[in-house]
Amino acid sequence: MAQKKANPHCPVAGCRVSQPHTDDPLIKALVLRYTSPDKLLGWVQVSLGQIHDSILDDYNSSRCPKVADRL
Image 1 (tube, one colour):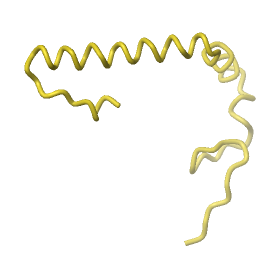
Image 2 (tube, rainbow, N blue to C red):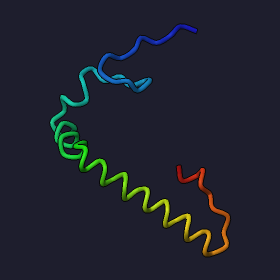
Image 3 (cartoon, rainbow, N blue to C red):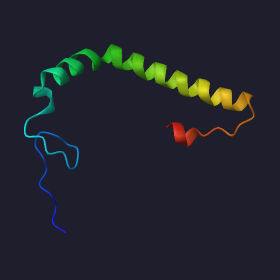
Image 4 (cartoon, one colour):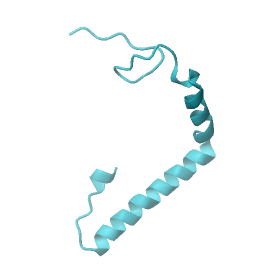
């Protein structure tokens, strides 16, 4: 089977975009707004807190925690 040529604008397999995603004004604004390290760290902290709370709720309710499903 022949390998498909990699798209230079996107690393996602099968993406057929003809220009970089960040050339789109909406995507550029989202990237600038939400990828700064302080915002990203906040999102990670909140996400881990939600996973922790969910596992704790499962444990307190005598349910089998589905850790693998959450990760």
